[in-house]
Image (cartoon, rainbow, N blue to C red; front, side, top):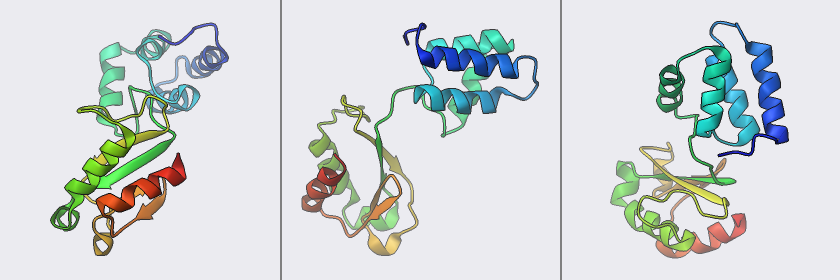
Length: 157
């Protein structure tokens, strides 16, 4: 639960006052709320539901439908590891394992406890000629090996 006496909650309150009674405001409110909090905590979704008079099921449906919304805190650096065909045949699985090991991520864990990194797998980055490849934020790193992962991640830590 996010502390309700914070500056973030004041900003959320002002945002909800601005959009109260405005039809079609759910997505822009969710986008701005996520900017405020960095993700969309459950109590923020409930507050949005209550203030906009939109059922929580509808709010949750929007949040879980669009990949841009996140229900958990995310790392400062987002790693998108390609698992597409070209990357797969060139060792993407071993590269992914090296990333998980370097970051200390356990099974099912995607974000490091210090919130420095979030790891996502994607079907294709569109850089098949560089396979295997991952992106960190907007930077593409290709022709990866399990051994090349550590030094790259160290630059972002």
